[in-house]
Amino acid sequence: MTLVESATTPHRGSAPMGRLLGAELRWVLRRPRTLVMLGLFALVPILVAIGVVVADRNGGGGLIGAIAGNGLVLPVAAMTLMLALLLPLAVAMAAADAIAGEAAHGTLRSLLLAPVGRGRLVVMKAFGVLVVAVVATVIVAVVGVLAGLVVVGGADGTLVTLSGTTLGFGEAMGRVGIAALWTVGQLAAVGAIALAISAFTEHPLVVLASVLGGLIVFGVLGAIPALDWLSPYLLTTGFSAGADVLRDPMTWGDLGGSTLRALCYMAIGGGITTSRMLTRDA
Amino acid sequence: MFGKTVAVDGIDLEVPTGAVLGMLGPNGSGKTTLIRMLLGLTRPTAGTAELLGHAVPDAAEHALPHVGALVEGPGFHPFLSGRENLRRVAATEPLLATKAIPDAVGTALERVGLADAADRRFRGYSLGMKQRLGLASALLVPRRLVVLDEPTNGLDPAGTRDVRRIIAELHAGGATVLVSSHLLAEVEATCTHVAVLQSGSLVASGELGKLLEAGTGGLVVTTPDVDVALEALRGVGATAFREGDGIVVSDGGPPAPEIVALLVRAGVAVHEARRRRARLEELFARLTEESP
Image (cartoon, rainbow over all chains, first blue to last red):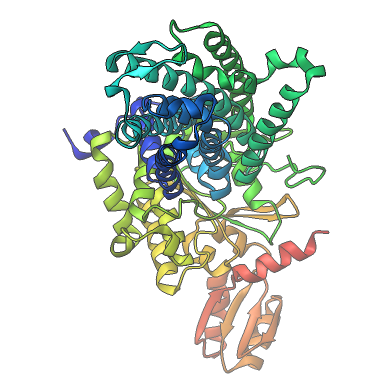
């Protein structure tokens, strides 16, 4: 076998998908701003834990109040808290860099000229955004569990549910896992919409501003009683469903409903992204 | 695409296989737009483009693996080193086997003289180094066509020589090269064919030598005996006139060997006789200033 034959494989129109995804993964996880952001995210559950311990004497209500003396509530509370703005911010940033950022750097052109097929490019980019969503959520969940056990402590590694019953450590971890999975689903919906916006611009800031602005507008619309009919269509309506994993027995209604809604947003975002990328100039 | 601006219009140009085509034109004449259409980055509103026998942009994926391109300046990520940037590009190259990537990247970096700076961040590269890295990414795989849009932009004289050498190597290896440039000396030194664009239209194209010969012809004879020479030539009906330190004999009269023989017989000291070729610069100026 000659050198030329071993170095090239002539009958292929595109690089292997696994290699493309690997390259995207390395690129996403080496980006300094992603790393800094993930590091800061790890601090949030710790800060919440410290806050709860300091404020413990005064007592408190709601999800945060439930953390007091009940550390395993912390990861779920942290994820729910951060789903409001911080986690979507991370996903929007990843999506902004994924297409708009590449276009701004002139690297989208290299990808299209390689060629990475335009359909494959969308898959590659969606994968990168999903990775950020998963990593960010897992970091919050894991640090939340650790901070809950170490800083807050209490209940001997068991979880006292919002319904007042007690779950063992294993089942508590299962509940945290369900909450994390559900959170990733919601983030994937945000990411799909962000990617669609990213496909239309070469200014990453436009993506960031649109997604955060959109979340705020959705939140406001959802809070207006006269617009009740609108709330089933708003992604943010289901953002509080994560706390349902802390009930005993678990209620699946809101978790399932919000996941279904997230899937609809993903389909819409994915469709728009794909149709735009198939014809986009670079 | 460009709003109401017509960037290129009615261009019919064929690049012969194995040629080094220099694309010339003033700023904004449509060179880059034409290249972008050829590579499938921009969809023309009318007309067709074909790349290595495949229609673009619809069947571009069959041709693009064999095409290396540096278009509109080098595009890389500032937070990665030159080598890492190139590896990322290499990972997307269909013709590159996974295990061959590190070697291909190393070879390409050496070829453009960037081996020493390969592990520095792209952020800190000079304009010329960025340009070299862009060139390296076009050379990752043996190509059938290499498209270089203003390759010598920002390069020092050594870099310009390197580009010239690389183009010559590609040409020797049988690849077709398409270079756009506004550096006429560059094109004259490296290209076999030229195409001249002006306001989005093709005003001239063809083999460089033929284009240069057409137009300003004539035989230039360097001699101290101008008067004797003019008299002798007028005697046989040839048109000749004094120019510089010699004479110019216009085409249309006797062929060159006869003219030289005649002059020598007349006792004229012929120091040098050569066909007059226009410099590319004159040709370019004439072509781009004539058209409206």
